[in-house]
Amino acid sequence: MANFPENIFAQLLRADNRVVLREVHGEEFVSVTGRELLQQVQRVRVYLQRVGLQPGDRCALLAANSIPWAAFDLALMAEGVIVVPLYVRQAPAELAAMMRDCQARLLLTGDVALGEAVAEEWRKVDKADAPARIFLGDVLKDDAETATDGSVFALNSRVDSDLVTIIYTSGTSGEPKGVCLNVGNVSYMLACTTQRLNQLMGTDAAPASGQQPDRIFHYLPFNFCASWIALLSFLSRDSTVTLSTDLNRLVDEIGVASPHYFLNVPTLLERVKRGVDAAFAQRPAVVQWLFARARAGWQRKRSGGAGALDGFWLAMGRRLIFSKIKERFGAHLRALICGSAPLTQETQEFFEMLQIPVLQVYGLTETTGICTMDDPRAPVEAGHVGPAVPGLEMKVAENDEIVVRGPNVFPGYWNRPEETARALRDGWFRTGDQGAPNVRGNWRISGRLKNLIILNSGHNVAPEPIEEKIAALLPQAQQVVLVGNGRGYLCALITGAVAPAEVQAALDSVNPELPHYRQIRNFTILPQALTPESGLLTAMGKVRRDAINSRFQTEIAAMYEGAKIPALSAAGQR
Image (cartoon, rainbow, N blue to C red):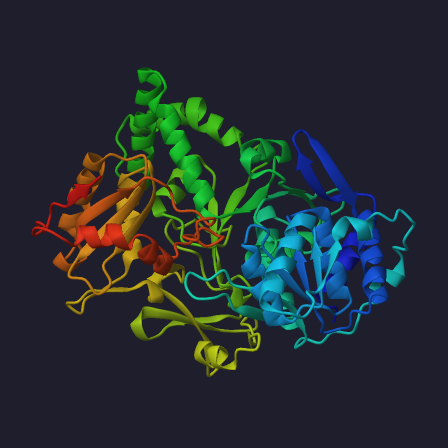
């Protein structure tokens, strides 16, 4: 039975003169066919053999998403070298620490200056020479003809237990850990993802004669597990993948790519929703009125309480407004795929109103990126992340923690046996996430176990559901973060262009529905949004609560000083 690199190489050989990958640069594309990508892979393999890399060696790959990144990744896997993908926006000191941890033999980089910055940080800690730095473009600049016949399949022999990659988790607290994934993990997961994509596109495993390739847009960095699995899934199929090269031009790039589907994080979809709301707030009163009537009609229809005119207003809204918004995603869009963090139910329903299904995916790096996936053939349940992938066992353990067992669960952390023993017990991986399935088997993620706020009264509070409710009432807010660990009550940090009166109104709406110990008694509006660059969000946009508590300890302390705070009326600061 062929393993996943062999399947990808076979697919690229079949693609031959068809474009499989392209980078979008404004209105122009830089493209490669299946044959051309294989030629690049072969050039890289020849180079790797020349410098003496051996199966099992670790090699760091530090570059932005690009065609060369894909070529190097495939070549390293074909040679049996363990790929260590790194994030170009991470601090050089952190990158150097990861390379020391995995004992990387080479640093393959797309940015000469960044490579030098990493080497400089290495020298500050380790007197030994930093690993050699190789610029991707230097390896690929040779234009000599390279074989793309059967010799491309002369892959190093691999068994399921052989490591393929070490992916360092960004971590919401503590230092990153290297998650080891093997051939068996990845092969199994690709079988699951390609099945779901076949279901979405209404195809069989083998493309039908004359069938058009999947059109895919991709902007999430390849060094993240789910993004990497997505890339390998696309290359395993009859696809044309358009790679973003400018995150500031995403809207334009999506329009040019006109995809059937693409992978997202909640941050982007929530930004789209806020942008639409803000844009309509500036439109003429009659347009705002129609938008509001159509939206209300859709909501009543969805809840089963539609009135006589709701269908009319909804039809008008879809024809004159909703369809125009949907057009920004291109003419071919079938669905958006969303993962990395729970998407708010309100945002998912907003896209449902636009007749754009949002299929959610849940998973961790330790589960090869995925545990659950929405079934595109079934109605989407907003607020849920779909059923477990076939062959994966999921159950709820102590403290509502989700634990999983199956072929996609990692074998362990790199050189961290104690961490591995804590995470894996009797074959079950402890996710650290809280949640539960409904009667249809669709899972809902309610919070992160490590994020629990324990008040000095002994009450445990999961902050995420409360933060979600407040954020839904504050569309201009960038982030809502609850604090209060070891304190007597909860307070909130709010970022974004919001007024104290707006925050107060939101709390006055949310608090009465909550038990006393879950009510928010005070808040502070922060002038700057939290960002990955500030160290307050992970690279995938998740809140780093320990870092936030440390950075804003003065502001947090101020919320707990002074007079008593009424139970249902928070005194906003700033």
